[in-house]
Length: 113
Length: 112
Image (tube, rainbow over all chains, first blue to last red; front, side, top):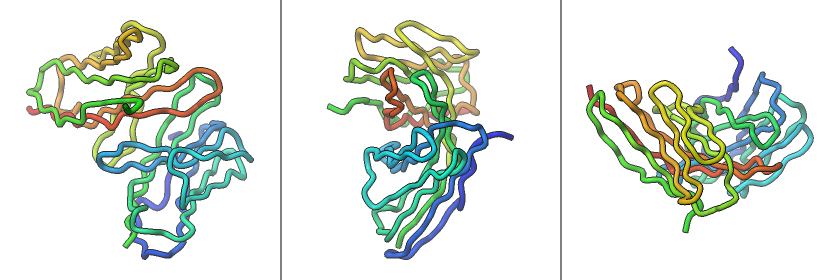
């Protein structure tokens, strides 16, 4: 079944550790996105990539980095995790174009202690 | 004023009821309007997608956009327990801006 996969499903991480959340899509979408979802704050965009080789900052980029080496993969890295990064992380993808909408992965639940 | 406002609920209705979910927005540049459904511990899934003012119907779901009032609605007819989820409105500008702005979501429970 075509779609977006994310790994891991959940993770408990000690503060200060480095962590990479993985995201892979098989729909050949050009654009990909990372969001975090927090109770009372909704979905907030962390980083995005309009096409392979390019990335951009979203609403809450601090403490996170991304890379887009190819069309299918869009990993999100927390260089030194802090408790405020405890959240549910969703990867999404879309075709480029103003009428195209985003399709979401199942999410990664991250707890930073 | 936040760009998108959505009543978080929770909203609890009996099975078979008509449900109305709403969002207001302040950015006149928004042209595309979406409703996502998110089941507990799952990712959001696209439910309805509309452009311009008016109504769009898909089965038991109707999306309504009123650009003059900056107000969008999602109506669910004959609601079912399987409709119990969080409903998120989302909207975006036209052109090359792909950024979606989300409401915070409304938690709906349909009781059998």
